[in-house]
Length: 99
Image 1 (cartoon, rainbow, N blue to C red):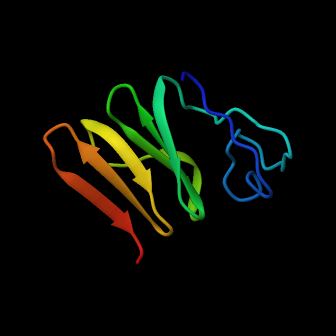
Image 2: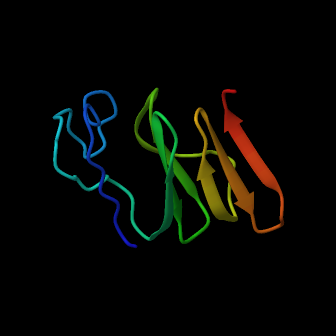
């Protein structure tokens, strides 16, 4: 997977997924994400794992895709209802969010 597309009601209104604030019923390319090897989603957020082990997240309260600061060497991601989890190459599990 090299690019990410994301359709959805209101996906662009608050989060500028494709660099605009225009809603789309058709998939749009998520701006700034390349070399993606895995994706996951929660209720109001989406997560992408890049080939270099960086995690990027967008959705509720996050304008456009943003790199999750301080998190590198990630090999797997998962999205829960209100939280996100990442498995690092050293075997540690990292989690953030609510509930």
